[in-house]
Each structure stands twice: as structure tokens, then as C-alpha cells.
Length: 284
Image 1 (cartoon, rainbow, N blue to C red):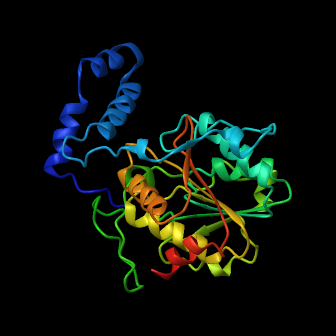
Image 2 (cartoon, one colour):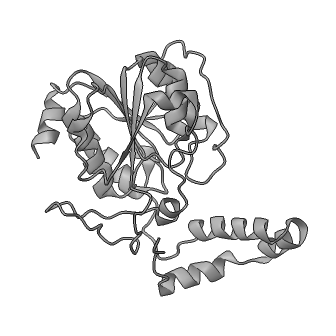
Image 3 (cartoon, rainbow, N blue to C red):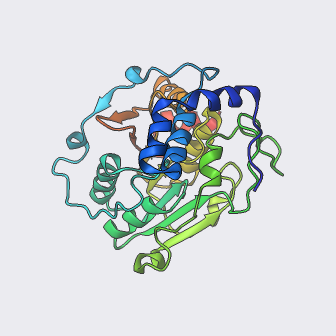
């Protein structure tokens, strides 16, 4: 798998990631631990990146305003501490909302290790979970550049290349009893034919590439296959992902009441394909 090119900015970020704390960790806990912390610091240090987004413009909603009496949920948290995974603070509300709505068909965009898909399957015993991600042999390109596509007009900017390379697709549900109800789809969500999914999807969870272009494309493509009132949720609606925040704010400006769930980086929308705002969004 091709690694992203190391630009001058990336080299400077790398140098800034090395500090006295990393050296002390290397002495106390070993080189492997120190390298892991240095990598995490590298991902946070970005003096040349875009300014952080102001999420305060997106109204918040308490979980109990969506689910009056949040149900008990089952949580397999073994992948919760892996960078890019969904930790318990956000996984629990996601599962509670999903369990409350009790869908028979779920679509997740962004499988990663498959932890969220497995937890959804654990809590929705009557549902089929469809989850999609890039193929394992996807060759990462330089961050910020468009992804190649055979479909005209579908060259969208990707991000999170470090997560793309570190995936072990579906490891969380492989050989588990719930795997019988989890369908792994492989392809770029910008061009994948979701109409081939035979189940009626009424619960959508978007956690794929976090650029504005993909947040928009994934949302619209989910809405395209919604036939009845449904729920759409997004992850990483926070200052570190300005593209996602920009899209959520744009949706609100177009009349869709998307709200952040208080204390999380999740956003929530209950919608109907017949809503005037949804039709306007789909017609653009």
C-alpha cells in the first residue's frame, strides 16, 4: 500500500512531534510506546492546516430529548482505544438511539475495524447491518488530492490516510455470531451502488472520509435510498473536522434540523424523504 508523500510541512510536523516527553516515555516504557505517542502527536500538530471549525453554531440536543428512557445497551469496547475508533462515550448514545428506533436495515459508511457494526448487530438482533469501506488494497494518495474514479464528476478529496492504512476491515466481527447479520461492502462511497442493498435502510451512520465533499456526498447518497422516515447520524462533528462541520451547518441553513448530541461529536437528524428541505437538497 502506497504511503502518503512526505511534504515539507509533514517533515516539520514530524520534528515538532519529537519532544522531551517522548524521550522520557522511550526510557520508561520502551521505544514502541514512545513511537506510538509520537505518532499521535504528529497527527495533532498541524501548523499549516485549516483553522479549527466553530461548532458552537450547531445547536445541541440531550440524548434524553431523543430517547426519553435510554435503553440498556450491550457494548464490546475492545477497539475503543484505537485511534479512529468510536469510544464508549459516543458509542453508547449511538446504540441507544439505534435501539430506540429499532431499524431492520442499517447502513454504516466507514467500517474501519468493524467495532461499531458489531455493536449495532449486538443491540439490534432483528436487523441486518450493512457497512462499507474502501477495499483493503486501496492505494492511499497524497492527502488533500482528489481520489481517482471511473465515474465522471466523482473526484472527491479524501483525508484520514493514516487510518486508511491502519485498517483491519471487519476484525471486530470476524468469526463472531453476529457476522451472519453484517454485510461488508467494498468500494468508494462516492460511487458505490447502494441501490444493490436489498434491505430497506432506515438508520444511516456516516463516519467515512471527513472532507466537506465526502460528508456532503455520503449524506445525499444515504438520503437517495431512504424510502420512509429514517434517521441519519454523523461522527466527528467537532473542531478537528471543519469539513464535516461546514456541511452540517450548510444543511441547517437549508432547513434541516441537524443537531449535535451534547457531550459527543455525534450529530442527529430524523427526516422523511418527503420533507421539503430534503427534496430541495436532493434536487441540487
